[in-house]
Amino acid sequence: MPRYERVEEAIKKEVSTIIHDELKDPRVGFVTITRVKLSKDLRNAEIFYSVLGKEDAHKKTKLALDSALGFIRSLVAQRINMRFATELMFKEDRSTEYSVRIEEILNEIKKPSAEETKGKHKGDAQ
Image (cartoon, rainbow, N blue to C red; front, side):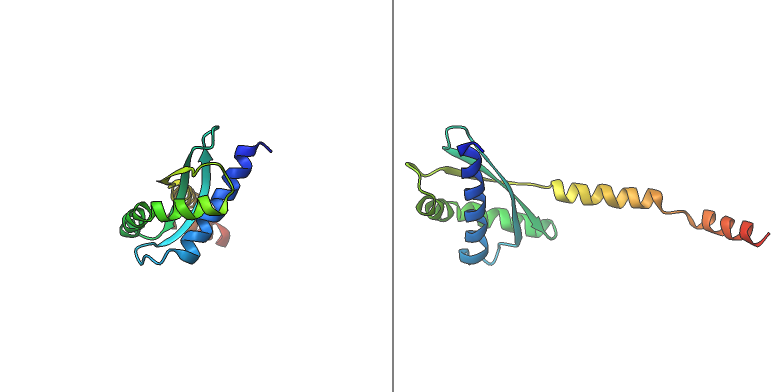
């Protein structure tokens, strides 16, 4: 595994721990760090997260994470032994919501309509 992949995993773990255990901002909703995309020179990291809840929870969480960025960055720099502190940027990952919506649509398509169900029962009686 290349070094930058190991650092990505370490950043993902640390940011997740910091958000869940040390960030006391009430605006932070139920956040999951889905992945980290680190530049090859290890200087910039995009942290992708998902939020459980309505649109309002998404907005509040984004504001809270952006305001806590310096705090999170300093703790990550302390805990991961590197020559410099990696610049962090939070990006919302809505792929989970998207896949759940697709699954709901597919289930609706598969579900037999009320007329089809009645037709099958009539045919069974004959």
